[in-house]
Length: 487
Ligand SMILES: Cc1cc2nc3c(=O)[nH]c(=O)nc-3n(C[C@H](O)[C@H](O)[C@H](O)COP(=O)(O)OP(=O)(O)OC[C@H]3O[C@@H](n4cnc5c(N)ncnc54)[C@H](O)[C@@H]3O)c2cc1C
Ligand SMILES: NC(=O)c1ccc[n+]([C@@H]2O[C@H](COP(=O)([O-])OP(=O)(O)OC[C@H]3O[C@@H](n4cnc5c(N)ncnc54)[C@H](OP(=O)(O)O)[C@@H]3O)[C@@H](O)[C@H]2O)c1
Image (tube, rainbow, N blue to C red; front, side):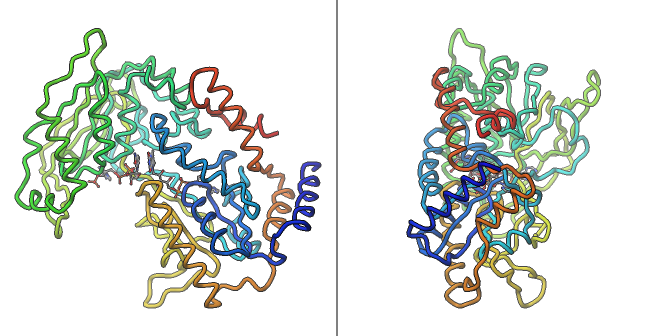
């Protein structure tokens, strides 16, 4: 109550003496990942009248830059500095622990703001829909990544890394490579990263020595990129195994590779790895990474000794079928094979989830949109626009693309907003309550809001804890711990 009064007084002083426009364009961005921050940054730049509020369900900003990007990729996280400058802009605010769909509904948000940009990413998983998928020991890569990256919703995953020496990873994209690397990298190298301490301890005691990375298509279609592949192939104390017959290309695949530099580089790296001699580091227990191609998961097998636990994956062998220029899908051959393992990580892609009242294309897993403008109906000839409602990032395009992809995505969405303002499709002439209305509503509902300066307290505590352990930060990884530093 007292905090709210102080905040309101500060707001009044600030409005009175700052250059803030008297009747601003009230903009709310939902989600503080790359898409949210790039949108806010562009909005503040191109619309001098805009006041931008970013809300996030977590008390910590930056989305997957904090909870997705691997701990051993610190250079990718430098973008956080740029995002922090945006949050500190005089016309921008960050409000954490505000969840669209429970703290506030979409229709309420739209009444409070002229413009709402949804950038809340993809927080669920694609599923395989095959028998045994719910057995213990099977996790989505998203859950596993949240666990090692200290996401408060991943804290209780507690994957069993001690009862088996073998893990199977389904999928061969960059996320699959990330989780394989975390399982296989010497823990002495992870110890100086910002990996969550509970994950580091579990990995130090892990008995997993063998990881299978399984793709339903071939080495020329693997979804990973060369830099990330090179990194895992170069891990210390790791033997790589690739079956050479899998590298044989059909003439049309070979032809297609000539014009696809990214896939050609991946194929060349895999070919080179298949023929290189095993590395030997005396004195260290060896780990193995097996790339397996042309296998699609058919079912999971249940352990006879441990009821309810997975003991392996049953695969159908596949061949490629051309379905258009340079496009190939995997077709089952009717031949089967299994791989025994005690842990499975499904890394077959993330999935966005709709909130109440939001048009959603369940097949594509995105919000239907025209260059970021949310469409209410795409079934007929004409398309209807949801006035003042926009989308950006993985929720707009689907769960692919690197951090920088969201910069271009945000530019597109913001230019659609500007066009709509110019054309009068979107009006900002009638005042809207914006930030004051949002905070009042949240206050009435007893939703405790975390400000950017509250986050800075968490940040400083994490850095302090980290420095005593020779880590860049030690993440506060439970809701209770996070709340403690923002009270
Ligand atoms: C495991 C992994 C590793 C990656 N590593 C790299 C890498 O090394 N380099 C690289 O360039 N790219 C990497 N990427 C890709 C990059 O992270 C994404 O392109 C990018 O984060 C997508 O941005 P986004 O803003 O759409 O979603 P997100 O980053 O997911 O942000 C969404 C935000 O919305 C919030 N939110 C969710 N639901 C709600 C709600 N209902 N109400 C309010 N807030 C909500 C979330 O808390 C989150 O902060 C990686 C992706 C993954 C999955
Ligand atoms: N370091 C980095 O830059 C970095 C790190 C992590 C993530 N990212 C980015 O984040 C995005 C998401 O990565 P991602 O790995 O989750 O997705 P992705 O690149 O789309 O890879 C998904 C993988 O799952 C497989 N798959 C999908 N459905 C399947 C099914 N039903 N059965 C079997 N296999 C299936 C795909 O095979 P098919 O190809 O046959 O469909 C593919 O191998 C990507 O753009 C990635 O580049 C970047």
